[in-house]
Every structure is written in C-alpha cells, then in structure tokens.
Amino acid sequence: MSNLDRQATPTVCGGRGFVVAEPVRELLSPRHVQLGESTEVRRLLPNLGRRMVGAWAFVDHYGPDDIADEPGMQVPPHPHMGLQTVSWLHEGEVLHRDSTGSLQTIRPRELGLMTSGRAISHSEESPRPHARLLHGAQLWVALPDAHRHVEPHFQHHADLPHVTAPGLTATVILGTLDGATSPGATYTPLVGADLTLTAGAEARLPLDPDFEYAVLAMSGEAHVDGVPLLPGSMLYLGCGRTDLPLRALSDAGLMLLGGEPFEEELVMWWNFVGRTDEEIRQAREDWMTGDRFGEVKGYDGGRLDAPEVPAAQLKARGRVR
Image 1 (tube, rainbow, N blue to C red):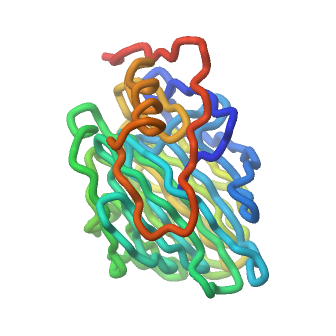
Image 2: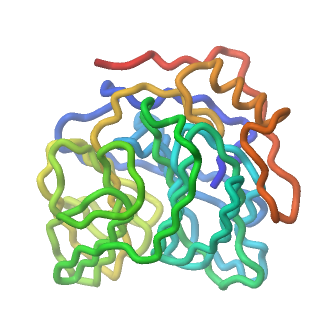
C-alpha cells in the first residue's frame, strides 16, 4: 500500500535515541488518512514521538469497511525503495501486481510480502467482484544498509505457523515467536504475529527482552498488560519484557510487532526509505522520468505521480553507535 499523502512530510526514523530501554505502556492514537476514493486508514506509525518499533516503520489499520457498493481498495501503480511491505487481511481480498511480474490475490491470514530492495513498483486493488467487507493492516519494514539494494521480489505464503494456548492462537507473520518461525524473508531480528483471542481468555505470551514491542488492536476489546485497547489503537511496550499478559473481554484480534531496535537513522518520505536527501530526490526523479522502478502491467488505470519533495534538505543524523 502507498502513502498517498500529497503533502508527505519527511520523517527521520530509527536510531536508539528513540528507543525506551525498559517496559512502558505508551498508548498511540491514530491519524486518519484518506486512501483513494473509499478507504480511510488509521495511521499508527510513524507517530508523534514514536517513529519505529524495531524495523517496523509504517503501520496503517483499515476497516472493517462495507464496500459492497464501493470500488474498495484502489491504489494505482506507485514506487517503493529500501523497505518491505507486509499485507495482512482479516476480511476481504486484495489483488497485488508488481513490476517483477507478480500477480497474486491475498486473502485473510495469508502473508503478502514484497521486498522492494533497490526499486520496485506495485498496485493494490479490491478484485471485481469482491467481498462485502474489507479489514486489514498494511505495514512496512525498513531494510538495513547491507540489504537495502537487494533485487526486488515478492513472496506469498498461505500456510503460516501457529502458537496456541487456551483461548489464544498466534499466527507468526514474520520472524520467530515461541519457537515457531515464519517462512517470510527477514533482514533484521524482528517478529510480527496475529493474535486471536476468545472472550474471557487470559494468556501470557513469551517475549524476547532484547526486542522492543508494540501491540495493534484490530478488533474486539482486550487488555494488554492491563491497558484496555480498542480497535485502531496501538500500545508501545518498550524493551526488557520476557512475557506479555493478555486478557480478552470479548473475542478480539491483535497484532504483535517487535524487533531489535533499529540502529541506523533513516529518512522516510512518501514511499521511499533512504539515508540522504540526495537519495530521496533522485528516487522521485527516477519515478517521474525514468524506468528504474519498472512497469506494473495489467492495472486498469494510470500510475501515481509523486508529490513535490520539500525544499528544505532532508537529513538523517547518521548511524548511532
């Protein structure tokens, strides 16, 4: 999914100066952003004061939306670099096309993982016809310097590992949780998991104390470490935890995001993750005038133009040691 904001604001992300090195309970409120004609998303990352969680650099939650008489998700071809996109659905379907030739319908609890590497372009749309409801999350993972120029590629995994406990099923989207490892490619130590809890369930989820964590509420009502979470909100949890208490007041869906704090500082603007002002500006120029990002074939419509880069220079402060 794209950042369609025509007034895209450059954001400095990463660096251990933003990381809380102890357990905390920091509730993040979303910013509402219109995505296309009929989809509004709740943007949780980047957030005021909280830019990343591990390598997770961007989190949108959308739906559940009734799109029976609407076009649904319609995101024209657009570019990415320096990141991975993670498409995750609870309801509905999304048709993915990209410039490597991938064409894939992504369904609930299936992983759609696109690694942009040096450059890729893609589109996302609700199929025709499509299901009545659309509900999911779109997330970005920043690539470290050693891997940010890899060849672009797309992975689809319909069968993912699970961790279970009474009243809890955790689907491992990326990384490793309690010994279960996703087949999705990762380039930094991280974890992403979809948590399904039944009403009245109480569980403690094992965590890595070296990771920082956050929990995104997708549906229902649950308490995370004693904090009530309603859909569309996210709780940042800091580092230093060995487990996480969960309690469901109703049937509930959550997403656990975590990872080793991302050491490098980044510049994130529009749909690009880079290191310098020059990289970002060159990427925009390449999208608007060149063929670096390839062509998405088969999408019924034009591609997305990039907004203007702000006149002020974009700066990341370099590597924090």
